[in-house]
Length: 501
Ligand SMILES: Cc1cc2nc3c(=O)[nH]c(=O)nc-3n(C[C@H](O)[C@H](O)[C@H](O)COP(=O)(O)OP(=O)(O)OC[C@H]3O[C@@H](n4cnc5c(N)ncnc54)[C@H](O)[C@@H]3O)c2cc1C
Image (cartoon, rainbow, N blue to C red; front, side, top):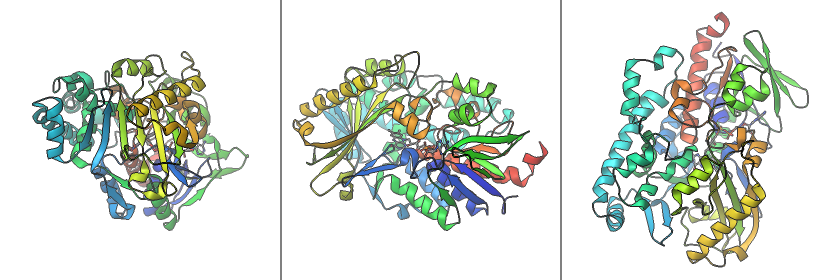
């Protein structure tokens, strides 16, 4: 069927767009249906009064993965108009000190040695080991499809899980390298990128700071949405048709096949293969007939959420670089509140994105565009939260820290604010519990073969792409997910497995 089959993609996030492009390249006739008025999902944008905000993703992590996936689509990084960043980000600590994460070894040495003598050599060791883990994990765990039980459950993989340090928690592992609490925070806070708590996440995730410090970072002209737009432009050139304001309300099934979808206006569409880019737990719960699988997925662990405040300002704050993370002395207590109480600490850590630093078109001249992200718990009926009050509390905590850092008039220069709470994420994008970092968490029992697969077991032509299926959250993983599912579709459809099983 590959070569002249039809494919229908639910959702135009990075996962849906990239999958559509892979399939179109292989001759599929593809239609993408998106519930919202524009593409991008969590890599979308908001433009208001001359300010441009990246809705979710703001950092190009793991550029080698982008390079690799783009290459397999005949694209290059150059086409993304990327600007390299001297500093990957700056960390701000409560005592007023700062640490700029950079690939410049001399500057790293100077900074680390002034925090803790002897720490630079240990950091090098940490990064080397972490990058090795990253390379092995991508080759053996994240960058391949697991379609059969014994592909995952074998002695080789049991040893692999030990090698990948999945038995040890990330914070405790990092504490073996550094005595300074600042350095321990600096090398573990990145767990939040995948919605995890560093005090419980496996040490495997030391691969994130290691990849950052090895590969560096860059930022696209036009913001992160420019990446989604470029991929979409290419997909359209290959014949993919995008349909907006087209929410799917049901996936039609017959026996062991998904036959098509029904939209909320009652109209229908059919295709040979259906690929859901919409959040996987949501698809099982809302779009498919009720069943045991949906109930089992509901009981799984979910990643944390993010409260985001987008500010359009009539003044610039050059003290803030492109990416700034404020780490609080109450690090552990704050994480406890997020993961245990599904709430937020009194003195939370937060991140600020200032796109104008590399791309002046993100704000009117002389103005600034800032997005502040605060890690918070996901929606949970057992732990209901007053999000209005928490937003107020987060805003005040951010103002307090910025005032202390010399930005004492920032509050009075905010022209407007756009707030995104966990409930807004759920409503806008159908992300279960507002768990925006993959929806399903990334503990070791929810990765690899254990993570819901990119094809349904019963409906053999229903596939999944995006952060909530294998391999997981973050744009690099989502790009890989698109390639993996497209390979699987092409192989399985070619082999006629769908029809025969
Ligand atoms: C605050 C925040 C910061 C982040 N920072 C980074 C970062 O710096 N770097 C990075 O790499 N990653 C980052 N991420 C993660 C990254 O944004 C996501 O992993 C990625 O964008 C997810 O893409 P996706 O295609 O899996 O899902 P989505 O982007 O959620 O796309 C799914 C699409 O499906 C649509 N949809 C849902 N239901 C339906 C339906 N019924 N009918 C039709 N359409 C439907 C949705 O509207 C959406 O457009 C961040 C995420 C957040 C929230």
